[in-house]
Image 1 (tube, rainbow, N blue to C red):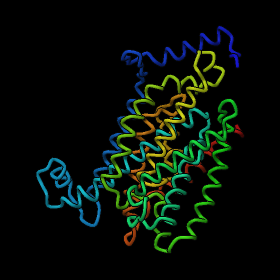
Image 2: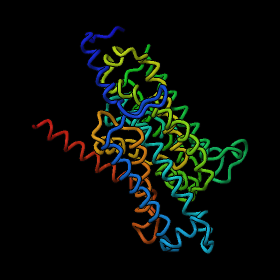
Image 3: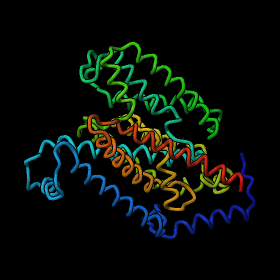
Image 4: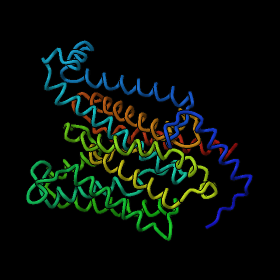
Length: 368
């Protein structure tokens, strides 16, 4: 398909992109420098650090700020197990999973140019849930796996399920190319099928296994260890820089298909590569902590408003996702005195409020 842009329109689009990238340049990689997103990222990082400190201090064994710092620098070992074996892995997994899910959401929303698009609607999280529940229903309970499943575990199964469903969604939506609207519709349909399959498989397992499966599906950081943090940390270390390198491609896609073609961008190859990044980020994030709802949907839009940018910024979205997940887990652990809520319950409630806000804002714009 040829571009419908005139020469003047193509030059104006190139000029807009050049103005955005007057900033940091390292070889072929150029990053824009704008004060507001940098300030927003710094404030968000400080908020995340505050939530991390509160998560380490608050609990059945309260720790003072001095004790937290002493454990951190290795001058106090009185509460070593509580600090380094229970609270710190939980906090780190929450930060990493939230960052991965939010970055995946920023990429997905930019490609589809839709604020309601997220990996949740591409079948990734529902595929991970279906795979985990299938494992619990047919191969034994969590931690008591048998047969070939004994050597893998829940995170690996969730990762495989998310990747398979993401690839299946892409193949079903392919018609000589990928259209964002068609991909979203296929993802919604696939998610509905996988959700119903998951509910059916829940009826096949033992009551105790079903309970554990439901806690995982709700998205929980309880009992997370360093082994859960390592895969998603490696994935973020590799995939997040790649998504930053692709920032200029994301900018071109945000202006529309005609602008992207007019700038000489290989549209299908670029869109496919970015979708692979988003699916991998979402699958690794889900495998670490379960499907934490609405992080990938709401955080990119929060980052968009903080930065006042033309599209959801990936790095700021990741920071917002880390801060939101860490803060939501602090609330989930301490909201009720007798029971700890899964963090997905808190993020789900926050996401529902966000959707209501979007609806009200959309209605006001329509009436204006």
